[in-house]
Image (cartoon, rainbow over all chains, first blue to last red; front, side):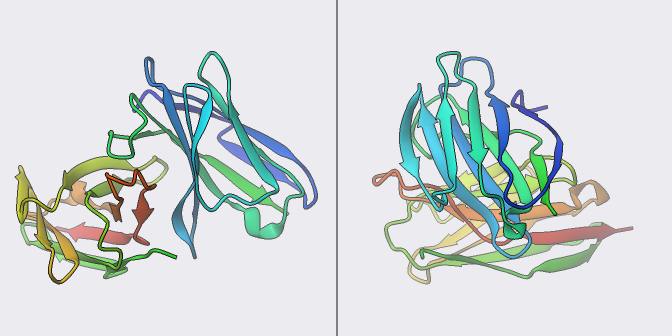
Length: 114
Length: 113
């Protein structure tokens, strides 16, 4: 168990809808990362927050947004969902903001868009 | 897009054998190369990582070999065990540029008895 929790585990929704994925980092970790894992694209970095501030941005669509709250949990919001957004979404956390700090991954949220 | 190319996509190895997974990168600014292990239904977990100031790093049965001139690095799993059956991802980033991890597409390893 990495200590990173993600809810929900599974999410099934329809195209055009909006969903929110939640992540609680390991105790003491200030940095949160979001990744998307799909069969064709592999594991792709979406965005990083450190202590409430956006730190780095990757291949995140404009329809997606994220934030990190004062209690350090993070939410990833996906809107106007498309079939291609179906994927596993992972949250990871680390103590420090640098990418080389070991990232601890949560169990993921499997999103299915129908 | 900066890429890390990983091969093979899948690998079947006999118990006790050596598993070898290869990765190649393009961006010469990359200077941090971790390997992640992922079991079904779980998130990836850091297995071992190397920086380019060394050509090899060993931790138990797992070894990373790094060839800076060829821009290639590989993971060797010695005495492979059925419990090693998982998907392995190589990744790369630039420490100095604090760039995000770029992952290979993964290798599904099956170790059979």
